[in-house]
Image 1 (cartoon, rainbow, N blue to C red):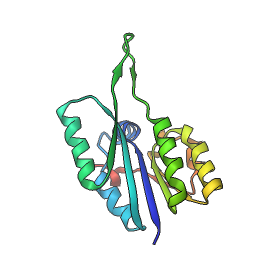
Image 2: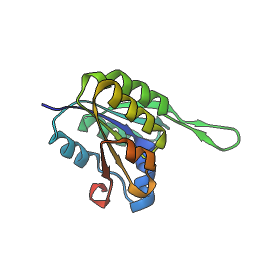
Image 3: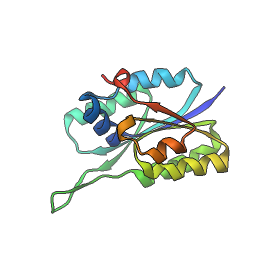
Image 4: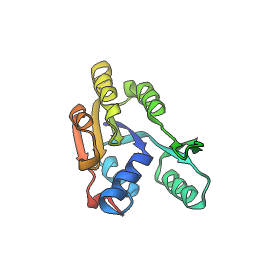
Length: 157
């Protein structure tokens, strides 16, 4: 049976889905779709912790679906900008897990992950899939994946 690992860049998916469809992403539908492809051996959702009730409810919903939620604190800089990037954390986890699975599925539109997908395919022979909003997903990320799944309104709530 195909062993699958899922990695979700929650902020990226939230903002790209909201910008394109003015709706939220349906993680439950995603889980059902991917579980038809094989056994999900791990699923991580990387998010920013702001401590508000709505966000805590969302994180609890992800946990009920089957995701392990990893949180970083929200950092507001004095100039008004914010920091909350999980790229390095996602990369480390993917590199640790890729050798033990058949497929890595990444949900993000961030082109920085293109090199990561190429590396794990070359090093571990793992297949790579990306879910992203087509108009907001970097071309190099799409090209670096074996399969690109466009997030359309079908996967929005």
